[in-house]
Image (cartoon, rainbow, N blue to C red; front, side):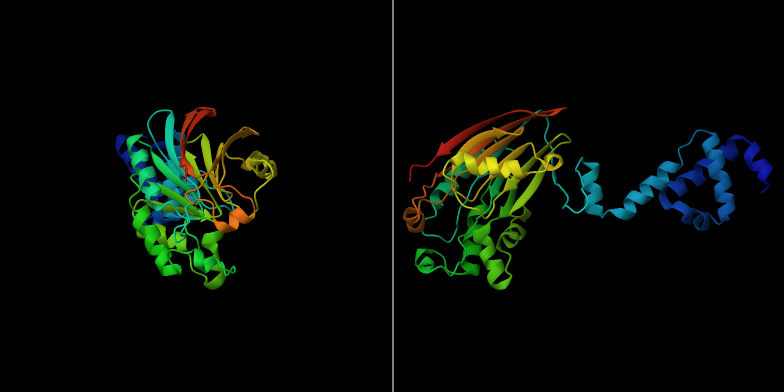
Length: 326
């Protein structure tokens, strides 16, 4: 084909051929030349003519670069508005119609402990269903674990990894809504002793459960808001709010979430600091003998939190605390 003919002819047939070649290029990149049986130089001439006709052929190069750098799962997440940050795990997207997202928040449950309030887990699920929550978040210490602390074995209702995993699956599969979980320090005792991943295993066994990460994990509410689940391995503070303040203070500005649900210390409170709505999640485990000896109380209960998101982020939250007097 003569170069002059190609770059000067704008007949209907030639335009259709340009569109055909550009379509192949957008999908296959430079491999389109081999697929169409033309030389690379000819492909380039067609692309120049396409630009003259106003077609955006560079978009195909950008899309090819994106596709080469992300997995199919990540590309699907990006298409739904997730943020994929270098060096960090992908952030799942929770999509809902309207501005409000209603979340059931469960603190430390400690399945396997004789102090676990097993019947109240079911009651919480019934309340989540009645109040029509969109999702449920569990913020670590799903299980009691095996710490090798003297006397801890006598505080167990279910002994060992298998039995604790089994009872956790039995109860958590009853959750009526999509379930998002992280692990806590008690769960990770199984990792430290023999590399066993109890919370990921529980999530794998429940179709509607997602494991977000070890000790912390993020959820995106559309494009403009992030919820962070946090556990930690620190201790209780002299004031319930002080621990949260120190955690929030440690966060880098560009990595702050809009909302945090925090576990580990079995305390319930709400705090707004550095533009973060913080909910300490309480627990489903009543005060243990060890906690009593350390003069540590356990706030038993759960939250239902409404998060309102607009184009600038979280406009407000409303939390309702449901206490168990155990």
